[in-house]
Length: 364
Image (cartoon, rainbow, N blue to C red; front, side, top):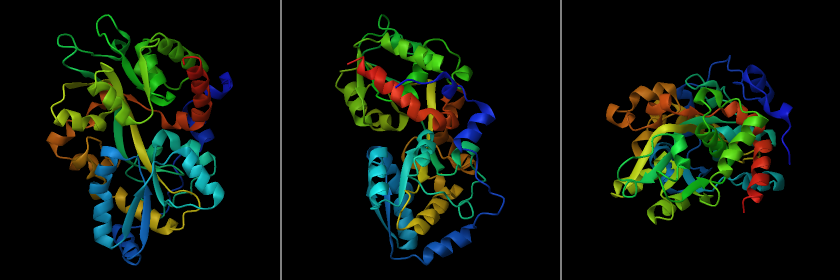
C-alpha cells in the first residue's frame, strides 16, 4: 500500500473539516447534573458493559468511575475487552453488539467512526463545554490524558542519563536493546523528533515526513523488540532484555513503586488521550450516553488521577487535582511534550497504518 502525497498534506481547518472531527453542534444546553442523575436513577437494576484495556489502566478506571457509578445508581457494570478495531467491527457487522461503552485512543476514534462502527454522541446529554474541540467529537469524548514516555534502567545508565528523543538512538552512550510499540502513532513522531524535527513542526505530517521517520527507525536495525501490549515492554525492561523502552507513563507506576531501578524521561514525551465511545448497535445506548455524561462531570473526571498518573480531560477538573499529585501527571509536562494531533490521525490513520505494516514486513 502506498500513501499519496495529497492524502497526507491536509492541515489546519481543512483537515478538521475533512475528518469530521470538528466539535458537533452544541448550541443547545447539555443536560444538567440533576437531569443526568435523575435519568440514571430511573435505570436502576440495569447492566452496563464497558470495554477497556486491562492492567493498571482498567484498575484505575474501575476505582475512579465504574465502582462509584455502580454504587450510586444501582447499575451493574461488567468489564470486557480489549476494545480492538477487529472485535468491535465483528460485533457491529454481525448485529451482536455486547459492549455498551468502549475506550479508544482519541487519535483513533475518527477512523473507527468513519467505518460506521460507532454511534453519534448526544451533546444534548453530554456537556462538551469543558473539553478541547479535539476531545469532544462526533463519536468520542475524552476522559483522561496520558503520555508515551521513554524509560530506562537506572542501574545500567548510572552516570549520564537519557535526556531527549535522539538518545534512544545513541547506542554508544546508552548501550542495550530498545523496546517500542508496533504502531505508527507514537513511533514515527518519536523518530522525527530524534531526526531533529522541532516539536512544533512534526504535525501536520506529510508523506515525506512519514518516510523520514521510517528511515530513522531503520537506523535501529535489529536492536528493537516490538511490543503489542504494554506489559510486554515492562517485562523487556525488568528482565534486562531492553535497557530503554517506550511505554505509557501510568504503566511505569507499579515497577517504580516496587523499587525497580526505572527512570522516566518527560522530555519529548507524546501526550495522548482516551475517549469514551458507544459501539453502533449497543442495546443500552441511552444508559451508555448518560454514563458518559456522568463520568465527564469534573468532580468525577478528576478521580482518575488519584489511582494512576494520568490526567483528567475536563479542563475544569485540572485545578481539582491536589498540587503534589498534579506535579507527576503528564499534563504538568505538556510544555516538554509533543501533543498528538488527533484531527490529523483521524484523517490519515488507516493510510499510515498500511504504510507502517508494509515497512514492518521489510524489517522481519
